[in-house]
Image 1 (cartoon, helix red, strand yellow):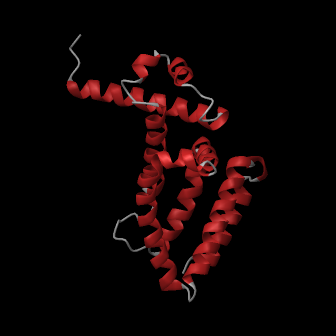
Image 2 (cartoon, rainbow, N blue to C red):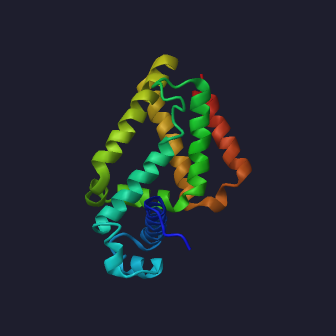
Image 3 (tube, helix red, strand yellow):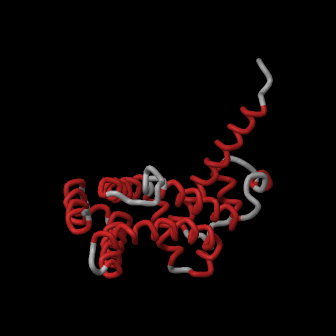
Length: 194
């Protein structure tokens, strides 16, 4: 058996780290951040509490990593060519991909919405999330500014519709089947796609 290379060790470490994050996300979303001890995450991940600290400095660091990495993944579908100009096709792709990701990452959104209501917790990753969100909001604002006479109102309406439908997907998925979701997405696109 050949010895492991540094690259293989790095790959194994990344797999373990992602495994811990998936378990923590599930526990935080379903049981709550405050009441989930690091020892429970470690146990469910099949490792000791001490070994967990080789991957994350603290429970806060673990939460911060979950938030930042998932937000990066979510916004990777935004402005696909990264030219800071949102075309009509890129806008449609973003809207559709947003809901696809929300269905696939329901636990993350459940956790995220809970954390938004707990300012002291969301502050853990607020500056990083704000930096990511600010760029997206700026590009989105210019899309609305180039398409509508009152971009502030249209952007507020768009954001409200997206968040409302998102919360329905997260908290009441039994009421939104594929056909209803597609109709809702299509209606949003009719209102805001130029």
